Structures are given as structure tokens and as C-alpha cells.
Length: 190
Image (cartoon, rainbow, N blue to C red; front, side):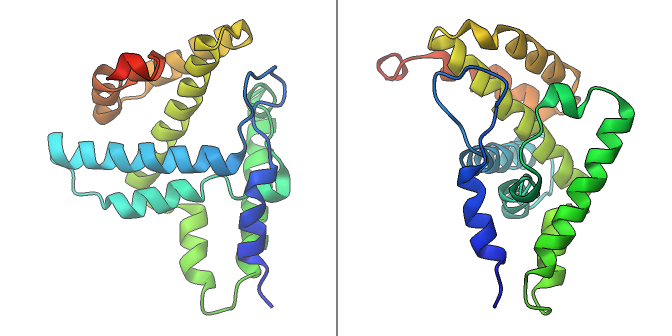
């Protein structure tokens, strides 16, 4: 009996932003879906406007599973995860062990496929997923601020600074052409 997919389905029980008062909750399943949509979009933008040749489907799949290890580890808040290099490196090791444990839940013939998805060995795919992950966090902050939740003011500045520091042209394109829509109401988007 393989428990892998049953564990993946439990992503909906892992909450994000645990140290913050949220106007709406977000779990890692919802977050992973949004990251997959954004990463896929960034890949399409790369191919369309910047001469890329990345497979948007591969990028989307990597994004869907990018936080799968958190099923076993939980979502460690960013201020703790990146408090110092020792904690960051130790947590990366914990994530790797969690991914190995998840992969071992699969039938042997499926393990190589999912091992590659969970560890994302392609640097170009990883770059787009990381950009989409940070973009998703920033969008969450913008939406919380739009709802009047000032608890996310500092996080919005931090995520914006992190996006500014990324040298990903398609991310810049997305921010210039798409990001402002996330601050509008439904009626304003018509």
C-alpha cells in the first residue's frame, strides 16, 4: 500500500503564516496551487518574451510539490527558518530527509520520477519556482493589506525587497504588467 498520495492530500491541513494574524487563512495546498499557476506563467513569459526554452509543465509540476516536505515538517516561519545560516542549513537537511521519506512511500518504479520532482534538480526550473514562491508570498501580503490588515505591512516590504533583488526578467515583467491587479477589487478589474 502506497501512502504517498494520501500524504500529499494532507497539504490542506498545514497552515501558513502561523505567526501572523490573518484576515483569511492559507494552507500549503492553496499556496502550492498559486505558486504553480505563477511559475507556469513565468515560464510562459520567459519563453514568449525572453527567448527561453523551459517546459512550463515541468515548472508547474515542480511548483505543485515545492512545499511537499512540509507535510512532515510543518511550515517553519520565515523569520525562524532564515534566522541564521546554521538553522537555514539544518532545515534544508530536514526538508531533504522529509522528501526522501515521502518518496519511499511510493512503489519502487515510481520513486525516481517523484524524487526528481521533489528535489527539483534543474536550476532553471528551481529559479522560476523560487521566484513564483516569493511572488505568492508578496501577493498574500498585498491581499492582507487590501483587507486592512496592517499586520502584513513589514512582510510586504520584506517580500517586495526580496523580489527586487531577484534577477529574473520575467518576474520583473510580471510585476510591471500583472501585479497591480491583485490590489484591485473585482469591480475595478472589469
